[in-house]
Length: 345
Image 1 (tube, one colour):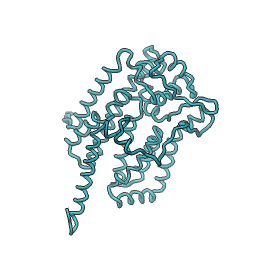
Image 2 (cartoon, rainbow, N blue to C red):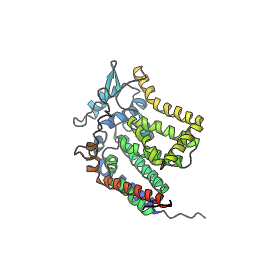
Image 3 (cartoon, helix red, strand yellow):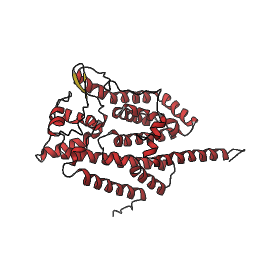
Image 4 (cartoon, helix red, strand yellow):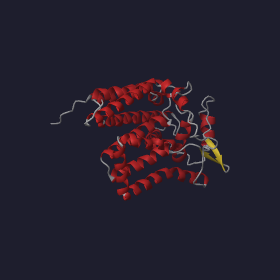
């Protein structure tokens, strides 16, 4: 006899959020012609690799004229994601997003062809499945976040509230609903998974975990190179200087696994180089041309408080979380000191 396990509070929370997200997305974008507005700005460049490879077999993206300037022309959404390199058109964006979206794109393409639909890569079903992919990635990211919080000993009720706050109190909801083709929701899953696996590695270092982290890091960078800054989280995930150095020592002692992790990371990133070679004949292209990061002028106050895109201004719940994290760090410091013979806490 099979007995069904009663779902816990977090599972019920995730299920409820999945229903809400699917209902809102379908109500706003899956009917009428609204689906045509889902792919905007950078998202067009990320996505374009999929029709380029699987439908048009054109890594110079000549179908842009037919699709964006013709069949699906919208002057308000027209966005040129191509640049010229030695006289050849190339996509200025990286292909990691397309790799993540590929299962959903291929499912939509298969169904569209089987039902005699318009298999041009941009018709309704493709966009609906892209939206579904964003919802799935968001829910999986929240599920992994719950596992990370549980690893830190956060109670179930607090974890459920945190997941709701993350889904509906931050930019995550906007990017699920309005801009599912942007990298944010998809990066959320893979970066959260990297945090969770890194936390596990520093608690119990092993060569196998190191290899998995190497592959995952390569994919995170392939989605958006700046995402590689996720490595800066390691000192915090380690929890202490001794744990950090122990994890790094273990990486050097498992040098074969570290080498495999590095090679696999490089191979994942090299997918982009292969696409460049196939499209232009050159492996190395700086596709952002005049755009770059100025690390010597980070504009930290603008990043956090400006009216343009200030993190704490438009997502005040993260300011509360920052204060809470600082309070937890003080509590942890006091807890560690209290074990000593001369506690001052």
